[in-house]
Amino acid sequence: MLDHLQKYFRTAMQPLARGLDRIGCKPDYVTVGGTVIAVAIAMGLLPTGHVLLGGILIGVFALFDTLDGTLARLQGSTSAWGAFLDATLDRITDGAVFAGITIWFVIDPNNLVGDGPLMWWGFIATLWCMALGAVVPYAHARAEAVGASARVGLTGRSDRLVIALVPLGFTQLGLPLLVLLICLTLLAVTTLITVIWRIAVVHGQLTKPKTALADSNG
Image 1 (spheres, one colour):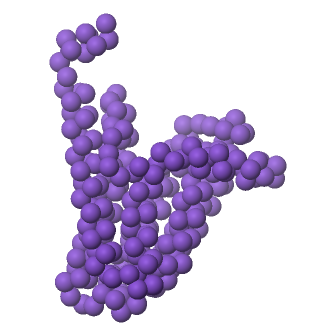
Image 2: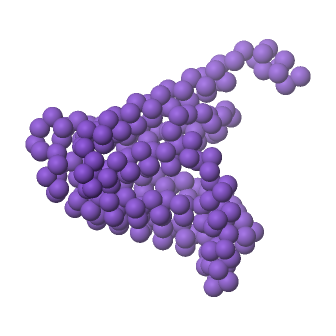
Image 3: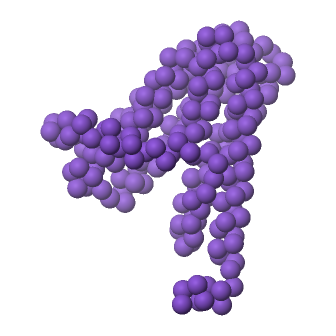
C-alpha cells in the first residue's frame, strides 16, 4: 500500500540528493549510514520505553529509504550491487525494529504490560511479525531467481513499519495497550496472508502446463 508512494518520496528527495552529490557522497554511504542510525535508534530507544521518539525517528529514516536510489540515479551509478546492499540492510533494520518491540514487551519500562497474558500476546505477535516480515521479501527474491514473479500482497515494508510503530508510539501518550496488541496481531495475519499469496502465485506460474505457456508466448 504505502510502498506505492515511493515515487513521490523519490521526487521529494531530489533536492537533498543533489546536495549530497555536490559534496561527493556515494549512495552506498547513505545506505550504510541510514541503516546504522536506524538500528541504533531501534535498539536504543524502543526497549528503554522511548517509543514515541523512537517511532518518529525511525519513521523519518524510513522516508529517507529512497534517498540512496535517488542519489544513484542522479549520479548514473545504479547497479545490481546497490540494489542488493539496500535490500539486505533493510532486512537488518526491520529485524532491529521488531526485536526492539519484542524486548519492550519483556522489559516493560513504562509499566504498561505486566507479567501476564498481555505480555505474552505482544511478545508472540511481534515475533511472528518479525519472522513473517523476513519471508515476504525472501519469497519475492526467490521467485525472481527461478523465473517467476511474486509482486502481490497486503502489506509492504512501509506498511509493516507504520502499523507497528504508530500505535506503539502512541501508547506513551495514553493509547490503550489493547490497540497495539490488535494492530500487531492483524499485522502478523496480513503478513502471513501475503506469504501464502506469494507462494500460491509462484506455484501457479511454475506448475503451469508447458502447452499453456507456449500458447501464452505465441
